[in-house]
Length: 427
Ligand SMILES: Nc1ncnc2c1ncn2[C@@H]1O[C@H](COP(=O)(O)OP(=O)(O)O)[C@@H](O)[C@H]1O
Ligand SMILES: O=C(O)[C@@H](O)C(=O)COP(=O)(O)O
Image (tube, rainbow, N blue to C red; front, side):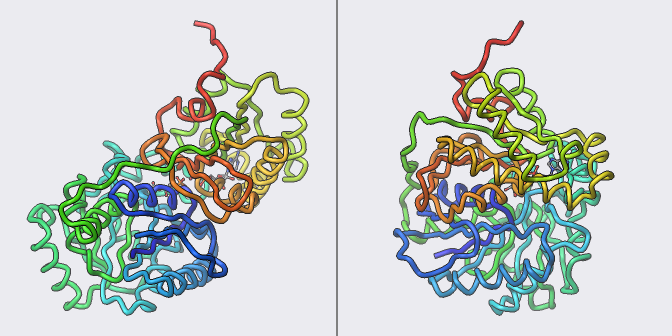
């Protein structure tokens, strides 16, 4: 079986659904697993952590703890999942975590594949693109916690590790899996630990996945999981095609709400769409820089001032407004207090009977899922590519949609809590 360690919660669900789509029976766990409860039959376990922006030593500690747990649960391959935009801080965690996992697993090499063409992230000659833009020209340069100002992945990773890095560029990738496997062996023999591999299509990822299928450690965004998953499925069930059956929605038509803590460009469009059609409440951290007070005011609004069902609570801001808040409160204080407020609001909403929660943003999802005490879930249908419904298995049954900041069409948030609740808007 394959064990994946994701550095945030939306990333965890993104990689879980990629394995699932490839035909692997996949379980998703939130936070480092504790105990040894029996698990349903599976071919993949994804453990979602919240390590993307924490202190590197702590990120390494948690990742190693999970790797040991996964090895004890028979994972012969470990997949380190990070963001398709390689989100990390300058002294970032991707290098230290990959180094520690490679040492622990005795891996001589690991591929590094952030490209996820399904989400319009491609890598060519080592440069990561978001759609037609270089990563460093894309809205990711304004990310509140991990502004990405360099698109050259060997360089970004090089600032985070002392291990040797080589680029395997697209002119090689298009020769396919045999050529790639030979290049991987050669690079490892020459002392390169990390092989940053270009990819611009699902076909490239299938070749890279097949070439890396026996590597004890692989690293990438969810795109590579399609390639690795397909190679594994072909071994597990030769000649069969992946089943499309996913678990049915056990929650049904229940009260829902959206919590948006992402400031990403796509989330802001989704928030604008939703604000025009649903009741919405803005969490103003500048005016109330206190998580308990912010949460109490939002829940009071929910109880007494909201007119319709399926409301939105959001803190999303455009880059200039965001900078004003961050200048006044500090980047970490602002995000910590808003994440704490979102967690508390989620608890309050569930206490009030909400059973369908849509959360926009990876860090925000981590805060909400942790506050709700959710530890495990099964994967349902995808509401948008890479954003599946998760049905909790260990708490009050909840349907959770943990949406990466940049995923989904503009109507996604509104549709996810019931498009039929939309108000008429003036033409
Ligand atoms: N108005 C705001 N001011 C300051 N920080 C904010 C604001 N709104 C959200 N944030 C913080 O920005 C971060 C967004 O990250 P995340 O939830 O991972 O979204 P994304 O998926 O877009 O990366 C969170 O830590 C969140 O608390
Ligand atoms: O790889 C991706 O793009 C996502 O799976 C992911 O990690 C998104 O992170 P957030 O944008 O912080 O939600």
